[in-house]
Structure formats: C-alpha cells, structure tokens
Image (cartoon, rainbow, N blue to C red; front, side, top):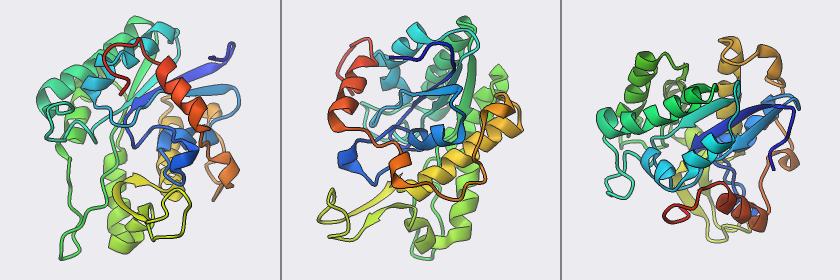
Length: 263
C-alpha cells in the first residue's frame, strides 16, 4: 500500500535499480538504498524490475501501474539502458530511435498527471580490456537519454559519467570490489561464488544512490530538505532494504496491470 500524506518519488528502471530479495543478497540495486538518503516525509516507491528494458517495462503494464497511482507533484525517476542495449530482440531498443520514444512516454505520462519526470542514466559495467582500460559498453544510451532530456526540458542526472570517473579512479580490482565478484564459500546465497560485471554490492549501490540524492538536492530538482544522511559513510546491513522473497514476489505481481508476462 502506498502511504497517504507523504511526498512520493516513483522509480522506474532495470536490474541495476531494483530492490532485491533476501535470497539474492548481497546483490543490491541503487533504488533499493535510495531511501537511506531521504527523510521519513518522502516515500520512495521503487517499481524497477530486473530484466526490464524501457520497452518491456511499459509493455508489461508497469508504467501503466505507476501512472495509475502517481499524483500531482510526485516525481518519476526513470533509469534504463542495461537491457535496452542487449542484442536479443525481446529487450533491444535502438538508442536514438525507439529507446528515446519509449523514454518519452515516461516523461509525457508523468507530466500529463502533474508529476515531475527525472532521468538518471545507468552506471557503466565493470568490464576491462587486457590493457586495463575500461570498456564503455553502452555509452550511446546515456547520450540518447541526455539528448532527450534536453529536448523535453527534463532534469538529467548523469550517473553514467560519474561511474566512468569512479571506475577509472578505482582501476580494475577496485571496481570489482563494488560488483558481484564473490569467491566460493563467502555467501550462503552464492556457495559456488559468482562473477557478475553488471550488478552491485551494497558499497557500489550506496555510492550510486548517494550521488543521485546529492544531485537531486544540489540542483534543487527536489526540495533540498527532503535529502539527508549524505555524509553518513556506511550503513548497517539491516538498513539496506532486502525484501523477504514472498513479499518481493507479491509486490512484483501487484505493481503491474498484468499485461504480457510478469517480467
């Protein structure tokens, strides 16, 4: 249930943004930990879905659900790109064509209801060549988002450019420490370990969420007094927002108009 009498920020996005189940911890989406940086007067409604592109999010009725519930003066943060750049046709959009067209539906839908759209670009993956150079895997999608933001006068938070700066400073191993590169036996949910260049550990997700919240406040995209705890260096695991698996599954099913599959 959505809370009454509070300011609300809806978040639409993909697996880099979504809230994760306890069974997937320590994998963490930055939208999952975004509430750490907002006061209790603000409700973060994280509707991001793992495996979604800008197109499939709308096709499955998830954008429709948001637009059914969003109110005047609410906010809608939109962040897609990780799936849109994939070659598989079930996700693929072309950066300067249908990707922009689908993103425009988020902007128009929010504004038609008196709400405020905001774009946040995706962070880059942790992929490096044999010479230690960071590969820019899907840079044209942040470029396309930035172009559309300018065309539509939509605030744009450039998490992509910030991530390029961070990852370059940290280098290959330092960046890997923010992603799901886990040795066997360290975490019960991943007994055989995992090497995942896309999804973040809590430290990476918190850094991204902190940057987004700082930008929203510093540029007065949202009222600055909504944002808090930017100087808190770390948060306990109990504050990081992983959800019980059954509760997570129920929420995923509920936040859709039920069109197509549940992806």
